Image 1: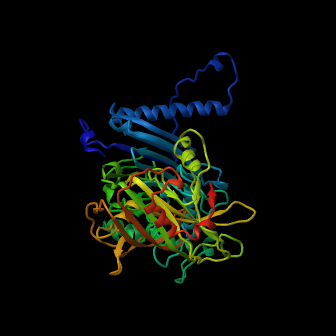
Image 2: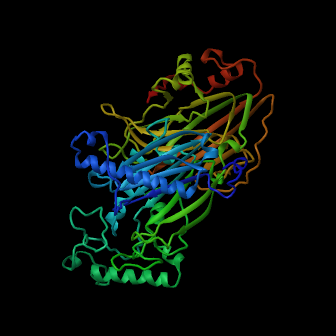
Image 3: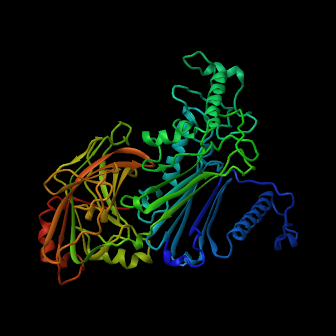
Length: 589
């Protein structure tokens, strides 16, 4: 992270996250359990004893890692959920700059209750940079239905394990500057045209055993076949031989082409906008418990164990992968662990966009969505838009009162409150809504906008008698929007000669300059066109388009103190844009 904090640990990592799945062990000897209750002859239940034994195991694991890392590290998170664990350690030199740590999780085992499958989330904030670590264990087995189950597991984890202080509409992949998603994800090798579906003993659909006892025997082979006339057993054996031939030739690139996970990301089935690095090493599953890679014959060798990452809009250049590899010497599992190393440029070392002594106006217009997911039983939705932003962004909207301002900026730190956000009216029964004539005006004054300043546009389905349903979210980096003219980030492209710019989610390339200059006196105006995917629980949920008029005006004399004290310049600007705003309502979160 920060060069000035390296000191005597020049080659050390600042943050270390360790995720475990099926993390159980049997101790040859356990320390005797002594408590005040047991000394007083109080009968302990079996659950009491197991909990005490588990606490001993956690303590011993923590001590083992601590002795390995040394005194220069301290643990900031230690969470267990069934057989899943997630531990996060940081260097003591940066620990004082960890301003918050949030922990959450979700079960996706049988009935979404059992914790043999699911995920654990740890979100930490280092100064102004939010980092999230998600350790997961997804549904096992080969076949299309199990692939869909894994995608659904991911959606459930993102839906339930939220750590954002802004809104429950934002999952951890949206609210983090950078997020790392890792663990036994169980995605398999699937050769084109070869459809093999495991037929699993009822009740064992989330268990992948060593002895193959979870798979029904040969009398069920005729249930699944392919056009060549092969039965399930023969087809599976051929796929295993095919995968092993790639491995023997060290053709990991050729085998990786058939990886379910990268296909799912490209298809929009899961973890949209995440990056999975190519696996330039042998598959990590299913192996004998010995050094090296010796594969069992029950399963097609697959890259089940993975590390993925994603950066918020405008921050992709701040994260760089350094290494990604398997650990072949590990011998206590039928998986080989993997490890990855990354470097991150913290947000606070990136120069902000300086609006000191200036007014900023953002007017969103020509709002529309296309191809939204249906949220109602009639196959349609009643969508409306809600504008939300992070606490790092001091935005105001038409209709915000002095009471709102005081409650949110002053008492909000001490009293749990329902925050009011600007929103549009809903449009009935459509998946392609167009908010004709609607404009949403936001403003800021005398501030500096850093790379962590995020604006979120949530697409929500209106329900008259039940709680409104989320459809998806669009994430925008305000600093990158402001810098788009002549110095766009990787998500901006020039589209015409009229001063407009296009913000797409396709990673188009316009070279970045340093911060563009803003005149001290006068007015700077430009229009940015936004065309971004709507994402919900890691999946594509539609497309969002709009135009944003960005106006920066020069010096002023007064300070923001509610709607009645706006400067004349700002008032005249906003009044031209808010004819429809009087009809807008503020949503109660």
